[in-house]
Length: 57
Image (cartoon, rainbow, N blue to C red; front, side, top):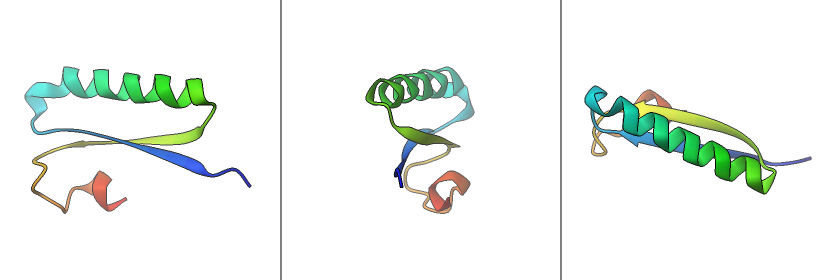
């Protein structure tokens, strides 16, 4: 059974949506280059808030 990798990408505000998209693309490129089976979880919100949907997942 192959393990599934999780990439977690987060930015603090909606104004940084472009930064989030760049993070996601960088993580996707890395995971694919390593041949991992993976899922990328995205969040927008403060790093101090531990109740974000993606982080809970």
